[in-house]
Length: 310
Image (cartoon, rainbow, N blue to C red; front, side):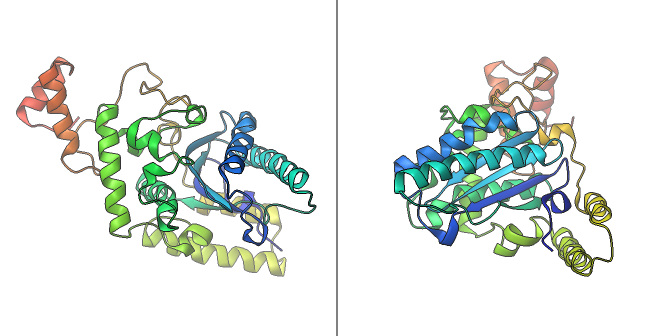
């Protein structure tokens, strides 16, 4: 018996998703078909609006990747991708005069432990076309969210993106965050610090303790499903307790889905002090803003004295 999505993807969780075509056929090998898939995905995103936070995406010739979070249960996510996949499959079958499925089953989804793991996943997604040898730099690939984060470029799809908490923590302004994003993503790629295949396809992305716990529990879950020793609802409840990370609202949805730099309280908000993602760059950004006179008076005093705490 296969594991259901509710058993491995509980509510209020961050996850990586990947959907591949049947037999790895290159249905999206042309710009026209990539654009058609993007259109299908975002035309139906309203079915998950407010219940799924979409952080990043990347389309390839025979699959796509997303990084997202469930703000509620997984039904809205399932309804969204089911409608989008059905739409693009009907279009492909009609144009190519074929019958049968286009996708190789449902999207594979694995949990992401925290914001640092989410950062690794997003960099992995960004550099997918580079690893495949399609481009030399992720900024050259038109069908991903890299340019939105690295250069601030927007299009009709970027309005659906939610900028994650770790990205906002990179600096106090968009320019500083974009510069830090470009530097960090290149470092992660050059040092091959992106997640392993097992993490991305089976056990989830995170620390050694996190992935080890997930590996053990998923084996246990599969065993009891196969033996039918526990009721599936009991197993689903256990999965929600063991795998669920109970992320806060500020972690899952720190900004408006439209991608505004203003947080829900209406005030531009970056984490004061040194960012664990960008080294001393965050403190430098405070000094830059002080010189321009845009920091609040109390923050100017902190920056002048070198204090980095709240």
